[in-house]
Length: 403
Image (cartoon, rainbow, N blue to C red; front, side, top):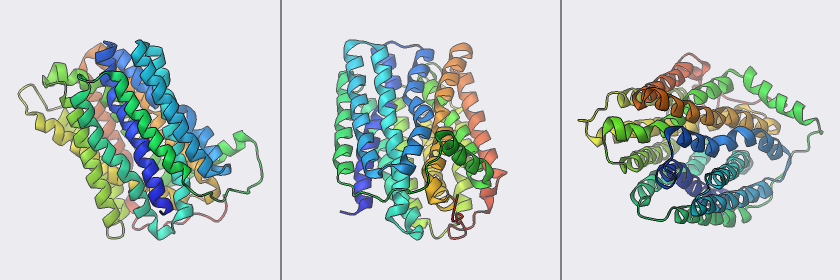
C-alpha cells in the first residue's frame, strides 16, 4: 500500500470523526442541552478553537519532528477527545462536552498539518494537485454522508452513541497512521521558537499569493462558522422547514465537495489555477446571496441548492490553494507557513461562531443570514483584486531554494 493510500485511509478516519462532531455539536446542543443561540455559538467556537490555539505550535513540530509520530499522535488526541465528549453528553455536563470536542479538534489540526508536509515528500511536484485531491476526497465524502445520517438519527439515537462512533473513526485513523513509514526530518540549525514562528508569518505576509489566500479564507470561514450557528434558528423561525433539513443541507454541501474534489483531480492540468481560485469564493458569494431570498413559501430544495453552491467551488479552491502553498514555500518553512495560514483560516471560526450567535440572538436569524452573505462577498472581493488572477499554471510557481 502506497503512502498516499495510507494517508487517505487515515484521512477517512480523521474526517469521519471530525464531521460527526461538526454536524452534531449544534444539534446535540439544542436537543440534549436545550441550548440558546449564544450557547450554540460558544460550543461551535470550542470545536474550532483548536485551530486558533494549536496550529502554530503544531506547525513548529511538523518542521522538526518525525511526521509519522505526529500523525499517530493526532489520532490518539482525537480518540481521547471524542471519548470525553461522549462522556459529557452522557453525564449532562456542558463543560465536559465542550472540553471533549475542543480536544478532538486538536487531533484534526495536527493531522492536517502533518499530511500537508508529508505529501511533498511522497510525490513529485507535478503530482501534487492529484495527491491533494486524493487526501481531500475523504473529507468531502464524509461531509456528504455524515450530515445526512446524523440529521436523520440525532433525535432517535442516544447522543453518547454518536460520539462513540466518532471515537471508532479515530481508531481507524490510528491504524492507518501507524502503518505510515518514517520520513526525513529537517536538519536546520536550532533557533528560538519566537523566531521560527515569525519566519513563517513574515513569509506569508510578504508573499502576495499566500497573503491573498489567507485573507480570502479568513472571510470565507468567518461566514461559514456564523452560518452553522444561525442556520438552525433560521430554519425554525424564518424558513419554517423541518429541523432535519439542517442535516440534509450539510449533506448537499458534502455532495458538492465530493463532486468538486473529484473534478479537481481530473482537470488540474487542463485549466488555469486562476479560474478555480476565483470561482470558489465567487460561487460562495452567489449561493449565500440566495440564502437571503428564501422564505416560508420556498421549497426546501432551494436551501439544498444553495448549500451545494457553497460546497462545490470552494472544494476545488481548497485543493488549488493547497498546491500553491506547497509549491511557493521552501520545504524547511512549509510546516510553519501552513500553520500560520491554518491559524488564519480556521482560527477565525470561533469568532465567526460567536458573532453569528450574537447577531442572531440580538437582531434575529434574518440579520444573521445577512451578515453571512456580506462575509462571503468579502471573501470573493479579496480574491478578485489579488494576484490569484495571475496564476496561469502550477509549473510557473517555484519556491526559493532557502528560506
